[in-house]
Image (tube, rainbow, N blue to C red; front, top):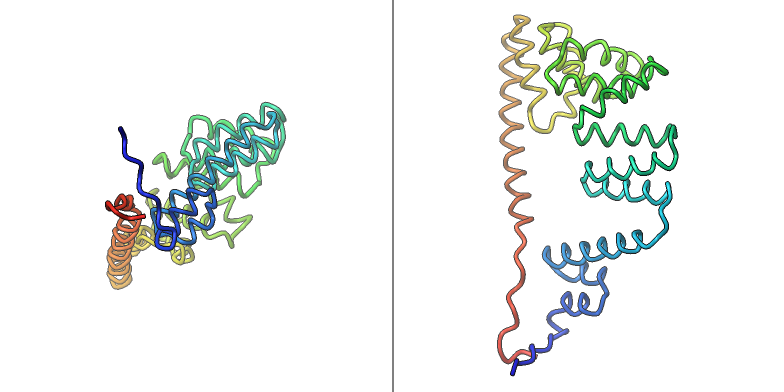
Length: 250
């Protein structure tokens, strides 16, 4: 005959008791990393189950796409935006959202034709030019990327992501002197040292050795910080379940 599991001591195990009672937000607030993750996962599971019970609609698929994107699941977001577009073909907002999701998912086989089709209708669109230029840059085609990124930056010079991509494309295309002002402008985005590394190489190619050394030192500093932050994050998300109740607890 199986022994009954010991009852929870709710004065001590507040998060476990709240979770068992279905009070998931309370469990997340009362517990450590394990119970927060468990509670939020259960809330997400229930939310998706409720969404799945609704009749299919463009709005439903769009909502599911936004949820997937917010959870860092670009492939799932692509799938949901695609479903939404089947119910609302030609919807400009949905197509833009699909483009952004495809770019995040790095699905260039689908992204590039879609971008080129949109650019035939809106050749000066800054966002579309940025997405196409950045995609070409990530495919190691910097010379092809430059014209699109130049259009994007000309239309929206305040968007630092465009300046960063243009600077990198120019540097990789062997146009170091032209790359420097764009890389310098985008340095506030550099959280892992990649832009400082490109800038160091551009300075070196332009004969500015002192600036090259300073940028390289900054790159090394940011790399060290980035690696330390990654290790810290990994240590925080190594979640282990709490030990089972010891015999005699009630």
